[in-house]
Image (tube, rainbow over all chains, first blue to last red; front, side, top):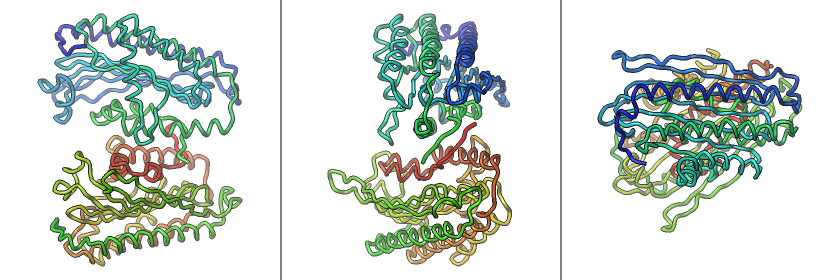
Length: 298
Length: 298
């Protein structure tokens, strides 16, 4: 990990490849979740519903007077499915200038406030309290420096040891292909990040989290970021399929609604991506797509 | 308004009177809401429930090693009433030392980090989407300076002009008894404060908001703060009674659940009291009592 980042590493050609990858990963993930919708038997009356499908909606980031801001994204959302109550998969590629307030806080922005950022972000809220919620995000950011970041984490209402182990093992495999130091470091970072100090409790059972990744080898870092995405897109549907045909009780559903309240608290009080997005004029609808559909603070 | 605050104005005798007032106001307000519960006819099946009652729970703030922190409060909560789905009325009186990070931001704390604070805070979430939600808070804070602050605002799902006018008129009367400049200033402050920039929408229809009030006449400022509390405790139940016997539709209820999501967004993203409370080790359960019981982000 170094902050030496020859600008050439984050060339336009590399930006294009990163953007294309995030879009392909989105397509693969949406397909994987739609396949789950087709295959479920539908406990608790959910089989009466049609299999859920993603709907896509494009949005554009307003350009500024100097024309230096712009870009946009596509928000893919499934609502009211048999398995997925609400699943959002956003890909956005935006460019602009950081405001005065952000320049000191973003690597490389003090020298020149212009930035380019592309990434994928997904949050899934299943109907069943027995099926874990999950989040994954990977991104490439370019200022006068450039780096990758991202991760994924699992938020079960009732943690099951074998699901947690499978989830961690999948990210460990992805990490170990690149650097044996990655997984311990990024798993610990995830535990530290997805934590609610005011509740003194973790958001879920963790996963991995990394940021400012620039080893000086763009190809290697991009390949790692791709493997993180692939690992999540494979393992999450696998865990969903283990649990999706089990029926649940009203009490379990209520526990899920309360647990989702904690998710909201984390995202609005602490999540840097959410707060950063809202403060930099991001697309509110896309950013807050992460919030669960049905929540209780009893 | 001046920041000249002779310490004697915020003497122990005055602290005791403020604390006693907030507790009395709490008792009066809880009684007023319980009377509403007794008097409703109970639309949408709510008459099958027993009239709601407040339950009180005391909590203590942990003292620090130097013994300079402490105090506590009482959280009064009504849940599942005929009219009120969740109503919280908290009174707390706490003392301690501001952390390094807060000293520069709190008037009078740079010189000496010790503080004393007492106040009442209430948030009411009715069952009916036709009955507005509401919030009121008044407080007295003492550092090397001392001041009052507070206000109240109304959050209807479907604003009704006559309710809004009645609510504003009540606060205007309370303000005008003290200073004709107060109401225009504090109403505008409220509109500016209870606003969601990321949605470009107000939280509700406003009310009043004031802070750092110290005219140099403690008795006058205390009397004003009492009148603000009295005005709210009179006008809110009056507005509730106008609407509480009307039946509502499922679509109206769903609109209410979505509107409540905006309330959550405001409180967790922007509300200074919430964020300040959580960051200074306040009582999480009491602070987040403001969050609505049943919320949707569809």
